[in-house]
Amino acid sequence: MSSFLLSWIVLVPLLSAIILGLLYLYSIKIKKLSNKVFAIFGLTSPFISFAIAGLFFIQMLQDGKTIHYEAYKWLGVGSYNVSMGFMADNLSIFMILFVTFVGGLIHVYASGYMKDDEGYGKFFFYFNFFLASMLLLVLADSPIIMFIGWEGVGLCSYLLISYYYKDSENVLAGNKAFIANRVGDFGFIVAMITMFYYAGANGFDYVSLQNSIGNVPIEIVTYIGIALFIGAVGKSAQIPLYVWLPDAMAGPTPVSALIHAATMVTAGVYMVARFHFVYELIPNVGLVIAYIGAFSALFAATIATKQTDIKKILAYSTMSQLGYMFIAVGLGSYSVGIFHVFTHAFFKALLFMGAGAVIVALHHEQNIFKMGGMKKHTPVVFFTMLIATLSIAGIPPFSGFFSKDEILLSAFASGEYLLWGIGVLTAIMTAYYMFRLFFVVFFGKNSSEDRHIVELPKSILIPLVILAVGSILTGFLGVPELLGGTNLASQWLSEWKNTSLHIDHTTESVLMLINVLAALVGIFIAYKKFYKYDMTKVPKFSGMIWNKFYIDEIYDVLFVRSIKRLSSFIAMEIDIKIIDSLLMGLSSKFISIGHLVARVQNANTRFYAFVMLCGISLISIYLIIELR
Image 1: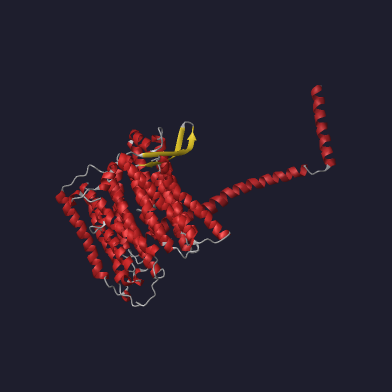
Image 2: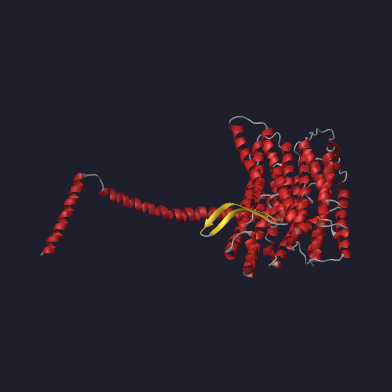
């Protein structure tokens, strides 16, 4: 199969976005178009990209070769060229398959969720552009091309989070996401510049960098690794750059599902795995990554236990699950981390889409303590959400069990028992806050049982069912040898596997049992407190955890207000009093000189004749004196 088709995985959603944008302009300027027109282009592009990726996957199964395609030379300086290149190896094609598949299901879901929105065409324009940017990020064969996709998803996240721009809070949420990501992106830029200077002499693609990075001083490699991780922290919402993620819930629910499940927030994990050849040289930095991931997971889980907004609970759960992924990649178990990205894509998309279905059914209510009793009203949503909740809690045989268990096993086998302990504690809290949400929403006793429930369209329900099946089956791609299975995901990602980790089956069995018991403990506590919860007795929430440890307020004082004061100082004291005074002083002197010159240049012919006569006279006197 021609490698030329590799570029079309990105081009299909990109061209679809361009067409959708033009059709939307036509619709608002000339003649209104039916939503079906936008849906045709919006919904087909992800599945076309998925089909093309599937063909490459089959080819790679047969010959095992990495596929490269150079579309054109993008930049040329002397003999040095940067190409718009694409690369399909085991890591990128694995990511592409579930990004396009899950992304396609979210597109289908969005077609029903957004059916009454006046900006339907604009929404799908943003949505397809978002998907194209993520696909470019993953398929790029060099850091600079990855960065184009990296910035593309950042731009689209801003556009989608602030989609309801008439509400100022939504615009502020979009700004917050955009600015926080720019802080992280600065780290990525610094890392790229440093890599180019020290290791880019023979080419700036991943293959060339991997061959030359070993010749770079270890101090510089460490610097590169830290700078890259700063970029990952911003994009994947880890401590301290996580504050944008909960506010990102301001966008429509399909946006939340796409950002949290398969695209933007997983980009940081993918980047660390992609630059594994850097982090393998600096294991201490990897350990820092793992601990930041662990504390982010625990911190987010703690906050989630007290939240009431259904989407924000899921947002903090995303941050927590990303923390697990960073534990894995930080310890060098890149295949394990990517496997959790894979399973997480299914159950997290299902959780957000199920939450969105409940929100729609209840006329856009998001407070879980104003829901209750939804089991009988939305049975399909109930059963699919149950599967997703069991999966994220780590209950076998659902997918989250296999991937999360492997992460905790990696932590224990690495001898990082504190990491393992934090992971187990976080697992208890995850099961607790997720089943707290589940019991309150579906079993809570609501006094207004006669309330009107909006009927959900098939475009919302069918993707839920498909994702529920995926949340059950995808874990079986990583069945450990202990359970008599073959870890197919680990075999496919063998280049990114930590082969130094070994643990006997007895210890593995005990650890697996502890993980399951931890989840059951969390579920039991949630059951005792929230099963058939009386919604009329909802306590008033307050305190450190409810207020998210006041981190937003602290950031506001330390950064936002201080930067505003600095800006005001620069504007008032430096700009106006110094720079403006200096420039205005100089200009006033020039004006005064101009006035003096103007007295001479007064357009008076007699005055000009007099000046000429005086000048000729002075010259004549000088010549007479000199000739004597």
